Structures are given as structure tokens and as C-alpha cells.
Length: 277
Image (tube, rainbow, N blue to C red; front, top):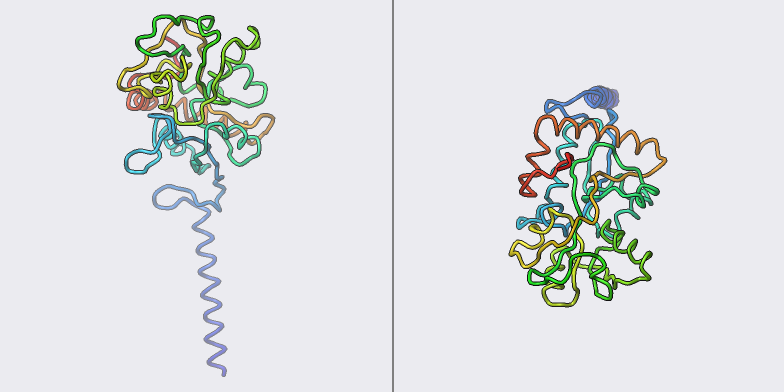
């Protein structure tokens, strides 16, 4: 009996020692340099999509990748106090998920505009800069401005910055444009325009060769807007502000060492990073 109790006591003591040893390791970095969650690493849910070619999409191997996705991964490497986890959603749901705290920030080529700025927090350091233009079929020579789209169907994504341009025009012009809100992937715009179901869409300058590699469409007219591209966070939230500030620091590093420009060239075909042309 005494031997049995001695055996149990030995096991308990071994467990206590093992527990103390584990606790000591979690307070420090492991051999690879990563920090264990119990040492204060904060998990961050990052909302993105899967239907924007070269930006956030599923490749032929079933992997989530693209410019925004790989940028988030690079930022994650430089901020050991956080652990980023990418969560994919329909684009139209991303801002609602941010508001309801299902995600902590949005990475989906989000353009900063006055309407969004009233509701959301943007980080300060842009990671891209774009210009929005009207996009039509290659043989369409009749459209050069929003005025030319009066009475015509124009495709756009719900909650997008491009939708805001069209909606603002309609507010000032008695709903002159028939806005068609897109539910499919971005590349569906090519089919809808070339098949004549809609007359045009509005898109960023860099996006056309991404969604239309065969060159069936073209941009036309003057720039409708230009804006910085940033990540979107919850407004009036101290933790979100701290996260945004930390991400700004990482983006500055990525700019200074050339990583950001290289990512843009790799995925977008040119350097569309923050510096305005």
C-alpha cells in the first residue's frame, strides 16, 4: 500500500514539474522565434473574399492567395504580437461582419471615401492607389461619361466604392442610371457587358486586365475618382486603433524595403502602391 501511495505521489510531482516547465516555455519565444498564445499574442480575424482575380481568390491548387492576401501574410510576419487568421466571405457581407465583430479588419482593396469614413476607421498608410473609370465593351464608342449612361444598365458590386459613385450620380440626377447590383464574381462583368445584358461597369484602373485577360473590354472617359486603398477597422474602438497603428508601422517597413512594390508587380502587373502618379 505504501508503495502504491509513493508511486502516485511520484506521478503527481512529475506532473507539477512538467506543468511548471511548460509554463516557462510559453512565456518565451520558441526556437523558430514565434510567441506562444499564452505569452500575449492576440488573434486577429481578417475578412477577405475569394472572387477578385489576383487580389483575393482561390488558385488552381485550392489555396487562398492574391495581392491583398499575401500582403496580410507579410504584415503578420512583422507583427509577432498578433496572429492573423483569414476568413473568406462574400464582399457584400464584409463590412457588416466588421460591425458585428465577426472580423477585426477588412482586406479587400477597400477604397477610402467620405461615406465610408463616416462609419469606419481606416489605417493611415495606404498600400495601393487607384483610379476609377467607366468600363465598356471594346467596340463601344458611344460612352465617355456618366451622362452617357443615362437610361442604361450599369453593373456594380453592392457596398463597393464604385457603387457609391453611381448612387451619388443618381441622387443628383433623378435616378437616371439603372444600377444592376452584381451577385457573382468580378469576372462575370465581362460576360454581362459583352452579351449586352448591361452597358457598362465602373472599376479601378488596374483591375481591367485582371478580370478581362482576353481584352474584350476597355476603359473610357476621364477618371471618375481616385483614392487610397487601405484596410478597414471598427470606428471608436481603442483596440482597433492600436491594431491599425501597428499595421501602419509594418506597411512602412514593407514600402521601405521594397516588398510592397514587388508584391504589386507580382500580382497586379505593375506598381500600384500608395504613391500617386
